[in-house]
Amino acid sequence: MEGTYKAPGQAHRHGISLIELMEMFPDNRRAEDWFTAVRWPEGVRCAHCGSDRVNERKNRRPMPYHCAACRKYFSVRTNTLMQSSKLSYQKWAIAIYLASTGIKGTSSMKLHRDLRITQKSAWHLAHRIRETWADAQPPFEGPVEVDEAFFGGLEKNKHRNKRLHAGRGPVGKVAVAGMKDRKTGKVSMKVIPNRKRSTLHGFIARRVKPGAEVYTDEHPSYTRMERYRHEAVEHGVSEFVRGKVHTNGVENAWSLLKRAYHGTYHKMSPKHLHRYIMEFEGRYNDRQLHTIEQMERMVRGMIGKRLQYRELVA
Image (cartoon, rainbow, N blue to C red; front, side):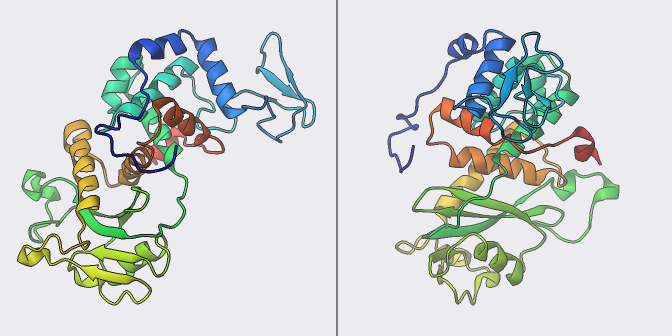
């Protein structure tokens, strides 16, 4: 579904209740059939070579399908984020539902309890689901609001050996640059190493079409953006809105992400922060879709990707 909707609470969307969810996926085979239908809506094709010369194995061994073209066996898991996973299709489907409907995110502890799996498996599962939103977006046409936010623990709450003793404010935290396109209502975010002019200009250049209107605060790194029609508000003198010049939209997105950080995850390590940012960005941008459409988009986002546990803990 395209377009911008103004009904309160996204009233146009069709949700799925827990009762309906269990009716959709009462067992593992029904869940597998759903994954298969979403991945191959026009019929099963080889997950290795793409051929339609596929035979279904009656005994489903060693895998449900065999390709007559490349002579390989495969399943709907093959060449996806589900590959080599020992979790059932039913648990994968329920996890996808929880991830798509949890506006402030879903912790690995909740997945651990709800799916009756170990917390270690739930943590790996959650990160693999986040990878479904890893696809790049087309550049925004604008007007675009740009801002930064910081994530991490307070210096005073850290162990004495981990304190930097370098000042207050964002010291010891990780910077994230973000933008919101007013035309589409979508956001784009990225963990950045610093707030230098080259870093923020590069972030904007890769995500916004030249000539677009760009609105920021008065941070000096945003100056001299010749490729864009740039205006800034002076937050330092309590100026937050000047006509159409403001960053309220992207700041609203930050507030939602920070509620997820404090209320759901409590901690997002710098090593994996980009995955949490990716999840929030993807779910925020899909919020206009019906729940089933969100889930289907996530299944399609699994194809051609892998994220093994050893990669996460390396």
